[in-house]
Length: 203
Image 1 (cartoon, rainbow, N blue to C red):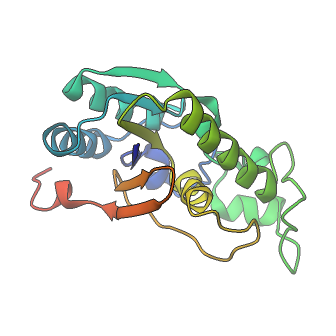
Image 2: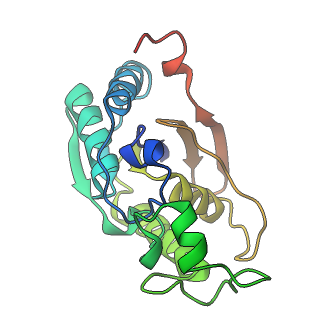
């Protein structure tokens, strides 16, 4: 099975300088154009058999654009949502630093942010949906997953079977694409954060 993992395009939160997470901002016009460029590239080079997406607007819109190019089924998976940042969602970074400052040594990974989830719960959620996809969608040769930067990093950690406390992270740009392959005996990274579809694009 191949896992084609795609981050959403630029959202309005990117321009506002706020904590996004579970705040449900739509794509910007640029984000919509990025999604179309990604979808055309994927349709030509790596068409999926099914698309799974986070239900948050920025991811869902990106996934629907991809579906319009490839024509396969699209399903919502709530566990693909971004980190639940609770009280920080939608707040400016300045306001958040005053109202909800981090403890001097940071927040322990098992303690959730107020009204949100902990880093450990976030990691386990990525593990849960990874194993669900391996079981429920094993009949498909290529599964597209449209999600968010923070979640994608956790998902790749699950794929690589990294420990819960690893200090590694995997960055993804707007509509960046990762291609992972998994069989009974081996897990292969074909590429990470490919944004070739944006090169030379005129937006």
